Amino acid sequence: MWNIDKAYIDGAFVPVQGTEVVEIANPATEQRIGSATLANRDDAKRAIAAAQRAQPALAATGKAERIEMLERLRTAVLARTDAIRDATIEEYGGPLARAQWVSDYASQCFANAARTLEAFEFTRRVGDSTVTMAPVGVAGLIAPWNSVAGSVCSKLASAIAAGCASVIKPSELGPIQAQVVTEALHDAGLPAGAFNVLLGRGADVGDEIATHPGIAKLSFTGSTPTGKLIARAALDTMKRVSLALTGKSASIVLDDADFARALPLALNAAFMNNGQACVAGTRLLIPRARMPEAIERIAAVATALRVGDPRDPATAIGPLLNAAQFERIQRFIRRGKEQGATLVAGGEGRPDGLSRGWYVRPTVFADVRNDMDIAREEIFGPVLSVLGYEGEDEAVAIANDSPYGLQAYVFSSDAQRAGRVAERLEAGTVLVNRIAPDLLAPFGGVKQSGLGREFGVFGLEAFLEPKTVTTA
Ligand code: NAD
Image (cartoon, helix red, strand yellow):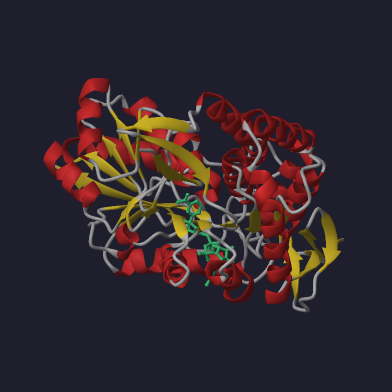
């Protein structure tokens, strides 16, 4: 049984002053596996004060010292890879392969940041001036529940590389994952206060971080509505803000695509991380002339996907996070049917043979119009909408007809043609004939999917500010 009742402040695990206790359940069994006591505003203030004390020394470090810190963080997280993987399975329901990827990614973030830092020039000559990229100051790092270890480590890696101390608020819906990652980070032996971690509600701990004058920068990953609240809250103290938000990504399959290769990849893009992924390719665009063939294949692949125990290597889709997520998906499936889409795989209710756990049926709708709710809203579960198009122009128009623009996918046998389509898509990232991300390239959204970029050199620069010195 887990009992998480401490925050990590000033280099030590200390009891939280908050008193709200939340229960933690395993989504595969619905059984209680522990509880967590949430931090409150006073805890957040203590954490911010600790980061403020650590900031001057951290800002004064050079490249070599920061690379050494990143290397220690990488080693410490790598040593806990199995524990991070197991926590991701137990608390989140991540299938084994995905949970393994997340835990490997957590340590890889630090290696990527070190590599980026190695090549980065902090000082440049511009006109008559010397421009130095200076750390922006103490950063508030706020993370969602669907990728706890990955979000925390990715943001922390960029902050340390830039010389910024941080206050990290993982989601209150991922206490075990946050605890295991924080224990690993602690083992790196960084200076006290360089990073602080506390679990708490968005409305108090999150809001304190978003409004406190001691925080200079916010790096937030979560939903678009919360991102807007944070951006407004940050304005009074003019914090620098990076927002990684909601997605409703389109996958365009061009008419020359090899369906045997493209469609399994496109389904994987739709259902990855149990469908609880910001980058999930949940609008699949198929040329009308090839629609019957596509639907037959898609339905066959979706129906064959193994849903079940996330510990089983054969499982493709584990349980959703909790009852609220389960009910949300049921509502969207009902709405899809009510609005006239055709169900070709899955549907309401649990998969056969699974009477406990927040399991849903991988669901595919055909005959979807882009004005239906299932095509416009982020469902955040394994529900795929298939839309038909007549030609490239219409495919691009449908893909771009969304308030969001995080990621898009293009599948074609002609990479150059796919590249031309990619250029016309309103998305922060377009993946062509692949679904694996490039972790050194900038990642973030256009339109209401966010502001700013993470990863690599762009992620580093998000924690830096140019300072100009012009001498007579
Ligand atoms: P959320 O917006 O509900 O919460 C995200 C974080 O913000 C949590 O830690 C929460 O406690 C905190 N928060 C809530 N209210 C706050 C407030 N007023 N002030 C400060 N902090 C506050 O999102 P979620 O449900 O945890 O995550 C799912 C969403 O995140 C989805 O929309 C998904 O697309 C998005 N997401 C985006 C990316 C990306 O990189 N673009 C990655 C992962 C998830």
